[in-house]
Image (cartoon, rainbow, N blue to C red; front, side, top):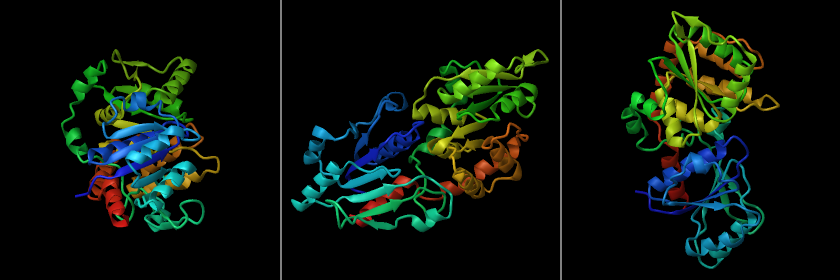
Length: 370
């Protein structure tokens, strides 16, 4: 059994809340397993809706420049594990304070560099490698690279120990009623995206043919997805044709959701469109057909990452083609093959469930390096 340690996790919010989303899930999962966590973040505003209940064993602290009086918190609970998330550079005065404590007879913290998620081959080669610190007050210490991933040779994926049980107990109709969504048995499609050029085409497909010949209710996440859909709707005047007196496409705009409610959204839907790192992992655990919009990069490096991900999925040709179109500059989209995509999602979830989760592996690494 892992003993309780004091963790200090540093996070800088770049954009779109994916970084703080991952860091909060990590912090909350560690706390649920008996760890004490201080989460240092430069902009914690998203946690007001993402995790309003917080967790009694997670203390959220402002990462200001400099840290100021908050550095005194180290005196009562010295850092034992130091996590810099996604390449952020930890405040130098914090490192200096940790070094002072060690020189005074304290413990040297285990220093983890938590990296971005990828299915590319370099992840297996780089996971758990040491990176000696050459300069500054922590010279002589070692950072350890920790790469999330999809194979046993990586750090795995965030997955709470009770996640599958909670999903098994989930009741879709009850949840939809609680969200005040009028559901008449339509196919439910969740939309969490940036601004894909093919969005108008997708809405036209649903309005003309539904999904597998059935009417669609599109559940649109708040923020950029909702703005993108409203922009398309304002430019289109015939997106909702009638067939047999029924609309084939209905749209419900959702409020900002907690992380738990976002999981419920994924569980409720027959097809999910997700974006970024945190939501694609949750879509994998949902086991429903999904399409991932990867964060676009100017040098097109995201295309290599996308191909590696599709290879990991062992995605059927139709799913590969759809991903290429959804992540590309064109507006055309191939057909959706729900049954094949569902088979793929269930198979990859089963394979990933057989592997240790990220927090279990992280706790094991820290125990070895302490």
